[in-house]
Length: 126
Length: 126
Picture 1 (cartoon, chains in turn red, orange):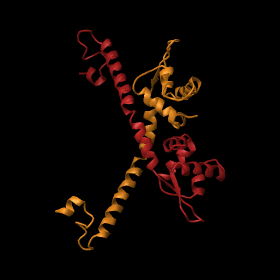
Picture 2 (cartoon, chains in turn yellow, blue):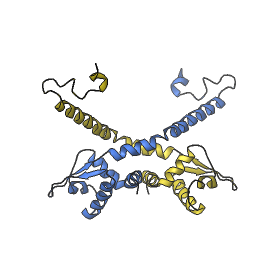
Picture 3 (tube, one colour):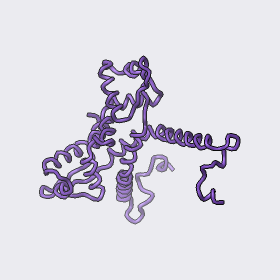
């Protein structure tokens, strides 16, 4: 699997995203990571393997205590990929704004679009 | 599957990401979408179903020509989720910068860390 696909695939699970959120607070052991989840250690380990495979975490070398650590580089790549589409979601919100403005204008006297009847209360009291 | 998981899952495939990239140029028919891929129409349709299920595309209602259209709202949510981790990848690059700076200093005379012997050629020629 290509790197971007394996990043997105690893993120496509709420438990794995929760593990990353926990690791954002600092590195920790598998036992501590497993504690808040109603899950067996092997189940948590399986999720950790997926995250490790995607390069989103690394494990310490100490055999007794192999702390997990967040690695953000793949997230940076994912963010860059998504960011290309920013103009599209920003455009959608611009269109929504324009639509709401049109609705408001339609509500007001046709020749005098502003101020409308639907101004804030503060203005109404003036 | 929760919305964020289904978004990331849909993005975890290079063909689906390529389809979104194509749709960023404008809405288009399934046939036109399928053309650049060495894939059967049913295979492309399957990918489109995944994208549609994740809310990343919508299909027009015209029975003859059901154009596919990019919908960026789920990408905005995914971007927001990832953005929380921005400080981590920025921190990694800061650490890398600091490390490279230390390397460069170690290379120079201890009491006069700059300018070092490893300056750019342009400076060496001065």
